[in-house]
Image: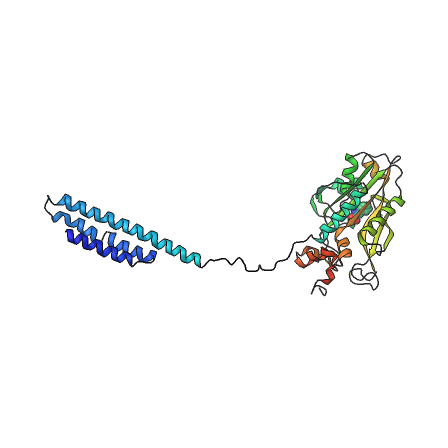
Length: 355
Ligand code: PHE
């Protein structure tokens, strides 16, 4: 029995020395320590020994099992360590390797325009205020002198959420909110998303951005409005840009005007698809705040007057960066983000011209 056990120990150890992988170890474990293995057979054979010999033999067998188990554990640690070294050697990092090229981030053209407008108007004493995009009909229309069934409502294809709740179709509701919550002098600007049920084309999008301005005080006149908007146009576009005031109509201003700038795509010389051949694009609506609106919003129109303007930021960005199609601004094309960098113009963007 003693020799038998010694032989088993020798055999197991020799086999272990040859096992290099976890799989090989597992197979050996099953062979030597499993239920059908030689140790189990020896234990089973105890019954045939004399009762006096059994305890001693049992001890030996158990000692042999302990020895084999510890030899397995040692070998397993070795094999694992070796496997780790092999895996690591395949994962070396070359810290001297040059990095892959990547594009720098940049501000979106709308953000650039908005930042400039905010800087310009806050510099003239305007305060930035905000209003909700989901708006009551009351602010979007009624307080702006457009009661229900007023024909001017048809000019803006408004998205209705409920009878009295809309997606704001312009930033003008913020005017009403400002007049109701403040006392003159009031000088505010407000920018954000607006919504109209328009088909997307080169100059329209169902979601777009406007910035609104409102100035109310004693003795504010049309000349103040013109001066302010001319300053704005020249400051943002440079002294070359031409500005045109055209009489217009808005229910909330009287008199009203539209302001056009020379066309972004053709420079106003030839006429093109963007300006529909006219050489001009409309960027802004404005006028003197209608006295009815002042009264509806709790301001004494015998004492105060004011002007308001609302502009489309997409069109301003197109004008500024030479972007011929408004849809580009919403497509997430990274090349467009380069438009504002170093004053580059988007018409330099390869391959986008003939869209
Ligand atoms: N809200 C008008 C529009 O969206 C623009 C506007 C604003 C006109 C303020 C006059 C005064 O078309």
